[in-house]
Length: 461
Image 1 (cartoon, rainbow, N blue to C red):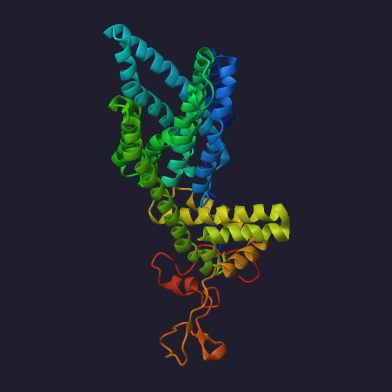
Image 2: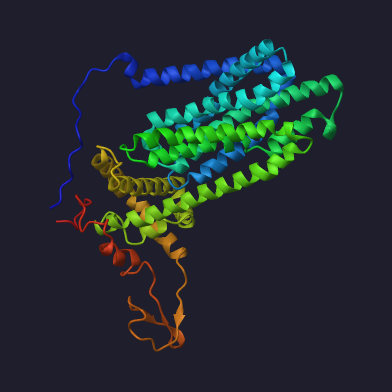
């Protein structure tokens, strides 16, 4: 009889008061709250109350779309909302405050030292601002990478964390720019399409809402690749995030300096660099997400053999369409609670697959067994609601059978088949008794013939 290995125990040790979680959370929340109050006062001082309200109303428009886009990218193995909330707050409050203070100080110092205010502004926008702003935003990615390492497992996580941080930073910066533009229009009397506010809104919100996220995502990709490296590659884990940060600074400097390239310099940089880079990174992230789905399909058959999952579940859990259909099925038959249970089942199964992959590569950590056991027991408790929904989704998304003229030699259909109408033989469904996962799993060198412990139930001796 297979037995469950015990949870690892830790020796009791005394913890200082500053090592307690509530102290750290309290200090972090206090820091972000103070930064938010200071940045609010600074922006309101520069834009005025009316300009601040107008800028706030216009700057908030792209935020839900960007957050939804990054959350969509993270649907395979979604991270906790608290991480995204921290990243957005850091970008909007702490990073924005660091950028405003450091950029203003550096620009004034350069103008005083060179006696050239115009040159100081240009140097500040093209050199100082990219270095300061990207470093301030990268600090949030670094904090999540260090202190939420379990939630930071690859490129997609790095992209999401960096993108949400940059979205918060761009939100605060847009309030400042749009509020200042509105104040300028109030002085000049301009309004409508010809106003500075309309031009600023078109450039920053309509044409380039993805600019700041695009820059910082390069840093996030560097951290994501470092997360995929083993602990033995210390140099790679240090250099990859630094390389991503330098690329982010370079693209940011190119974007800020586009105005110095002539009358059409902005549009040239936008068309030649920004749009292709945005398309390339979007393709990279979607391709990475498809690889994550492939990992789910490749790793879960081991748990099918051990009895934790049914043969159809690796197929259904490896398809975003099947996952969505399963949640919709559960909502129709079990309400919102059923849909939440299926969503949690999908998330736990995905985490198990990624954990098993990291274990094979030597990156799972000492608590691998305990984490795997906890996830599998959660799956077992949710199976009553999730399994019918996933079975329905697998049948709904299965490829249609391909008719083959009769008669057919037996070696054409190695899995057999059934004789259909009009003398045609159809290939069996992929989730019948001889599902492709069950047939191929014994030949997978990474799938053991048994699992360390079997799921509970009377079917196990």
